[in-house]
Image 1 (spheres, rainbow, N blue to C red):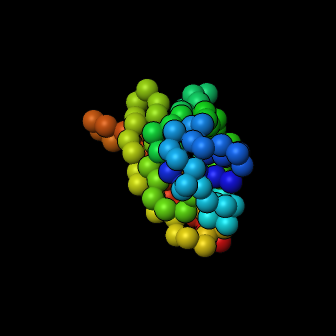
Image 2 (image 1 turned 45 degrees about the vertical axis):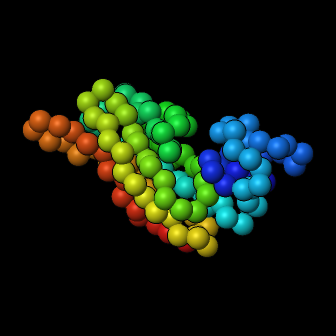
Length: 125
């Protein structure tokens, strides 16, 4: 079972989510979960620097050059953030109910004054 507020796994006999503290009245089953895949394409620029990856303001991983990571999230709106010394920004993505898997490619857009990350949807099932 998963928490309807934060998506964390919740045991059967718990009254409150161990991650966010919300009541288990809002617990959902596996049918509402979506496989969220983030790909960082292999590029020469910044190839040695791992990027911090946040989902809904929670640090979930560090993603390296050419790496693909997979997460189970609830369908709905999520904030994706990638953070590195030269850029950080949040992008909202909305995953429709009934979606089984969605793949986003992480791209760094270089600007004159500011760099920013973009999450480009490249696949959806």
